[in-house]
Image (tube, rainbow, N blue to C red; front, side, top):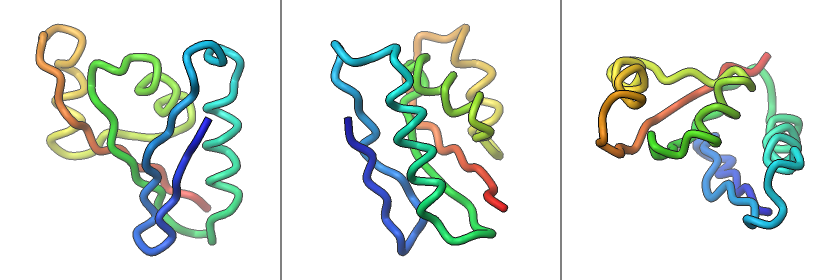
Length: 93
């Protein structure tokens, strides 16, 4: 798997686990490693597609929140066929 962190903007990109390795906690471990590598306090940000239910669920369990308009769109994502890019963030202390 991969998870790329831009240390200038605190944005994590390209979180990906190969299909045959999914459901083994690898994405969670990668995201925890990203968080551990960051200076604190800070805010970690990411963008995810709303229909990527597994990823959105993982990020929510890890404390990420869709803020502003994205929070409202997140609530609609389960009832709309639209697939949109959603920004999420997590405060690290």
